[in-house]
Length: 254
Length: 144
Image 1 (tube, rainbow over the protein chains, first blue to last red):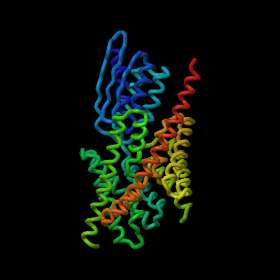
Image 2: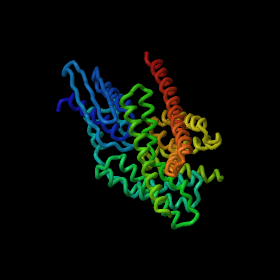
Image 3: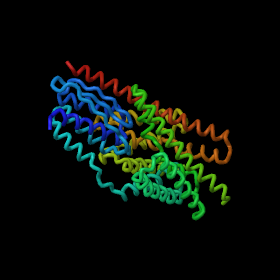
Image 4: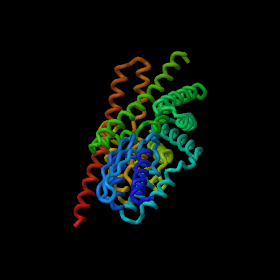
């Protein structure tokens, strides 16, 4: 394969991984620019959006080369962002060739084995601890722990079945509320407020919001606006799920 | 209220959340401690909008500094550290008032939550702008 094609493949894959893992768009753009500098491409123009990436390399030998990469699935994965970062740094310093970088990036991009039970446990402990942090007692901790585990049990299959993120957000909100309300029936001394508030904390779009503001301030208005809309929509859908379940519960009159 | 228990829960929650977003293990404990520091400031200042701002400033500065010390991206630390401040209670209470038909309370609770988010975003931006300006200046000085 020609060297310039390998370079193009490598930089595209690096920024694609960053965008798919929920990284900021300026990070994806900087990665491309940094890597091209290290690989001896004199001029590069890149525009990254949360949903795609366009770039053009200009070299004296090959003229202009362009590529568009579409980004479909986005899920937060900070380890991948970190790995891409260190690879792009090494390439920029000239410590890694385009071929080596491409091979490593392909390895990162390969869907790895998720430790499913570890994630369920993390979600459960996180929900339970948030409940205690917000002033819940031990009974509240137990109910919230169940909420967190249940949500993490249900969400990945939904994502695999191509259910839109906003819809699964609503389902998660409804599920959390239902579990918390059932908890108040089954156990005495359960308070609904700390349980639900704690259990929805990990579901709120915290990273998306801060990234959106950062993008906007840096002048990436398109990606900033898109990210803000994504965050607002998923928070609203989460709230809608909670509200739906609360009003249904009130309607039954328990 | 039992502060010790709350802060311990805050630490545990932040660390397990960073496990959930697949944060590299080496940065987990750091962002857990930053989360506790930020949340204590938030509690000390009475959970007001200003408290959101001050706590996030502290979190932002600590994250930028640890990112530079450990040579990692700042996002890695911020994600886990900021999560205890996210106004989940506000969102839930807003929804509860809406369902109860108490729109007056719903609007004021919702507005407080949105203001909190704005304060967090503003503080994060402030620190990130300051630090990127400083490092840009350093780079210019280092270059001949």
